[in-house]
Length: 100
Image 1: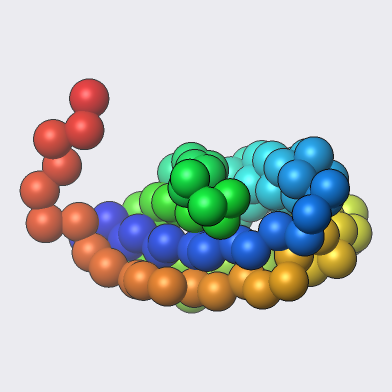
Image 2: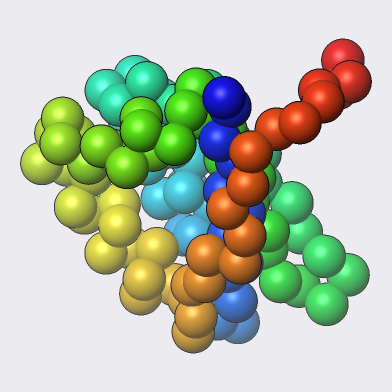
């Protein structure tokens, strides 16, 4: 069953570009090396970023990180440096998918 993870990122002032660049690069690595189905990044009116990540299964999500190249560590560090907080706010299974 497809697994979804929602993340919340509170980004420091003047760090949005660095955050987005690192998020995009890390997301592409996770997709190509770990088998994720990709992610979407959203920005709320108050400036908080929400990311929606999709995985083929909970098991594939749980195994993530085993095959990432070393450069992923740099992108993770850049994201942490650009944020005041990073939270996993939900993990859930897809029940019905009507997204086109």
